[in-house]
Image (tube, rainbow, N blue to C red; front, side, top):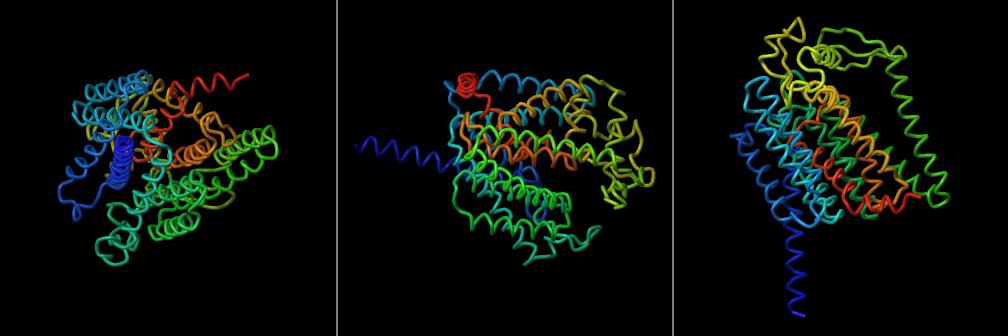
Length: 425
């Protein structure tokens, strides 16, 4: 009896330690902090690496560890890092390749060892604490938390850019809703955190993030409706999901077809849709600049991991905007960055994985667990939409990528593939 109690307490202790490690990873990996808060930026990266390594070492299970997909993804990332290094000669690409591979290995370990509820609770806790910390900083110490430059009055919090705070509000909203789906309780906490996230997003003046926060709530209501339909008639629910996704694709295509770009080659470009001007603050020009130089190097393999947005290529290809010397770190579009840095082959492989996940994660399926499918479906919609105006796909320490790779290993594990074959008539 005492031995059983010891083992139970030991497992509980390990689970708590994992909880704090994963919550800490979310806290420190949601964006680079201002130098006033962390004088040496390397300290923040050291904390992130410590959390990743600790999570990997504690949770690695050789018997159930998905070795083959980890090796395939790891080799692809390392090769892309080497390709970027050979292309530009910057060791940053190699370091990023190693960190990205470590993140893949870590997510594989925790997806096979930790309970899904523990993962969601830890993600939510880290995001909620960081959100509250940012709100308090902006209210009590506006000299540090509020922008006094180009975007005067906009909240930045601990970050050096308002859009990073906006992305945090989106992540806090998603994790709060996923936690409610997973636990089927805590609605009051969810309402409070979502309301605070939207309020914080309004003050940060990040319009794309605000749109994603509201979209998250809409998708949450959608998957809840799917559950009601599934209880009534599963066939109808399946058709409802597929038709809704098709409608979403048609709507996005219609927006692209009916919109007219304006003010290209400036930092104030955007689209005109039904007579309304929608500003994209230079994004259209940046996307066109990146894609126009894709074939200049290697259409199939791209420029390598982080290989395009370098001083060398800005010198070679010229400035993006003729009127100023703005040099971004990415294209503000994850899919554009994927194509430019990984080429057509890498882009096709990634999109294939994404489509497979979308098919598997429909809210009415229950191959693994229906609540897990619902959580992943919500996350995937926001992940894809968020990467239209921001770039997270190739970020080695992005918390969004942590969740994305957890999904990959959760859905494509040996056990779940066997369940899928058994459930297929």
